[in-house]
Length: 344
Image (cartoon, rainbow, N blue to C red; front, side):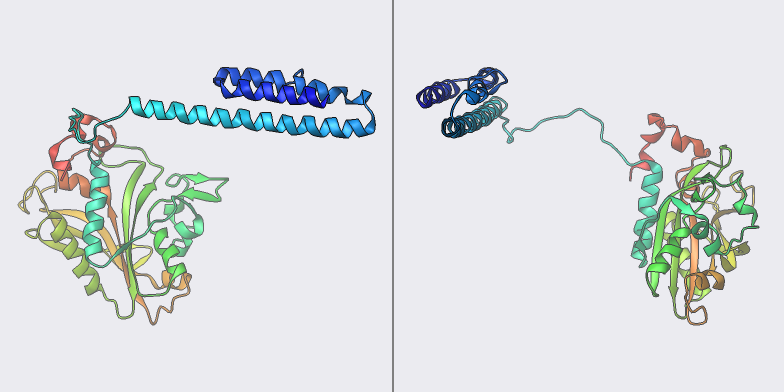
């Protein structure tokens, strides 16, 4: 029987040496399969003595492992040879120049606006951070001094999830809470991102849009610091030939609060249909961080002060590019998106 096993091994290894991929599979079945030569030898061990069983079984298993290993090695070699041959056939001369007549891709005007705003604010010392789009009521409302009775928390304005436990953030302001929780002042960050409101879409509104939240907290920060930053931002983004004014307003998470207007970029302050003949257009909201907001993150509001502002990206983009309907930004009409003024 030992000689028979040696002959099986020798014959199998010769066949493996000259086999292709398909033949290897057949050889594996022929020698190692359920009815293969070595399998049959192992099944027949019951008719031998104990000593012969050990001797024959050990040798048969050893030869089985050798054949199995040789088949796998041969497969790997064939695969490598096939890959090398494919590479030789598909060889490319990288020194040649090629012309690809495909149109150049561009950034969407909203993304381009976010990039431009972020670049300007980074030049003014702000860091860009991100926050989650799914928030809890505490981050989205309560930590921002918006109590449960506030109208902004009405289910008609907010997309609630998980049985009212979580929600899609209605503004990027929760980002400032998360940043203040993680570090102590000084802080100077912007938080760009997508926000959601449960409202109907029209020419001026969308249920999904983008904001950029700005926050600076440190000792001795004043409203003058806020005015200087926003005036510089508007000058850089729209041009320095436009006037800027701050009007008193009210936001739950800032005190005092203000709306920021700039001279109408279409009529240069003379009055037109866009600015409703006032010569001014509203750009963003801002104010000094409310002490209750600082208290919610365990900041010493007697030691630290800060300012915050919120920029509606689509609103800024519409003024910048002269778009009169916010829905145009999301209809994916290439005739609109390819306009050269978006691609600078």
